[in-house]
Image (tube, rainbow, N blue to C red; front, side, top):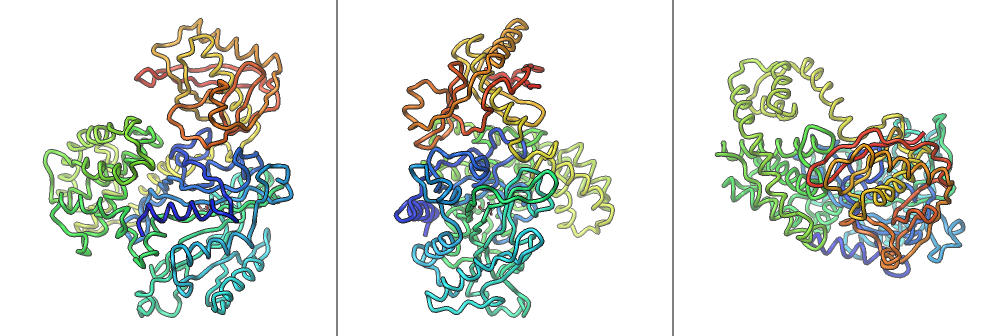
Length: 615
Ligand code: SER
């Protein structure tokens, strides 16, 4: 099956009766109003407010395919199954039926529906052989008992297809490292406010690899040998971490399912290499053409996988508005491109004048035409942006490679200098030195590498500044303040003002909007005054669920280019502001206290940025 088929079949399966899910669009890879991470790395991330109890405009049962990016996996790419960019197929139940009974689309579900449904999708829709499926559940700890309920459900499911599923043979129990899911990982790493819970994973066993003696007796679904591939994860998201470190049951019990599309396509064809499916092959073909080397040749595989993964990921990141830079998301995009360039250099044995990735980028856009790309949101510029970045890097690349060639002993200091002066990410230097067979002082290298990793960790996986992953009170206040700010800007500067971006941390809000010139001091003062007047009026914040068309015709502000579901939540602040928004917000504006703008700057091309806060 093709990627397109598997994606569509999954969406249809969950939309059909008796499952009756509503499809929601994929969110951008850059999280909106979420201070905790740089990227959306799973389908649940944009849904956190709803998992914590906000009502979703489309009800309690949702399904989608979400663009996802996991920077923390960058060094794993090259094997048969890891990628930084992937699509996550997701289905959710937001709470139990009783709690949501008042909603017109009530009827959430939990373990006894979720596990059989996913099994049915795998075996009936994708046609997988049930004998090739293995499952895992949570073994229990001091917070949550062993998930015997899921074990019994799995036994029943397998029994129905004539398989006696025994524990330790087909059903495996693991601890928090494997069978607990939250966005931050195991319970200890979760910041207060974050939801999480035990999960149940499904693995596919590749028949061709089954009897490979190298896997030995000890091989089990969760070992890393490649015989088994994880293809889906049902998280029973029912706990929330408290500020004292304890866990409390959420008022609603959620299901958060996620399965990697690329992996599901691979198993539907019994292929253990996910890069062999149609979501990668056309891209690999481009590299084969450029390098005159074959993917079939095992020595080329890791580099070709890295190049296609990284260029595909960079294409998607740039499409979502990220420019390669030295900061945050931009730095990650830069690392992807530079690493791809170095890999290409070695595959081609050099290049002049610089690596040209346009054919691969075009192929990515063609592959997702009508799904994530539609030819009208500045996508034409992606090749240009990448080309410019490569142009900048080409000189450093040449110089850096010369230095690496000439040095006798690979020392960590040189590696660090290369990083600082020539922009060589450390993983690249390390890889090049390894190719040259140079002995690396592992200890020293690790120390430098640690420093680098700490730097990039804060720019890649999480930024838990102030321990805030939740939608804490201050974040909620700043969110309402952002609505007031947008309306105030429209009143003071004019109706051409539209939101271009928004990002909130515990300390401040950041709001990007269209306006052709710098704000005058008087204008900034006026905006602050208008917002504070509205706060003082203690306006009530009201929410209505409306069909998207009605929301827009009623004058609710929305973000151009953003994909909204067919029904949306419209938040009004008194008669002052009306916006399409997921929430949450304060009940009335007095709670905001005093609003203050502390910085206003240009983002270029007619876009301004304001930093402000409330206290
Ligand atoms: N959030 C879970 C995961 O990413 C399931 O969707 O694995």
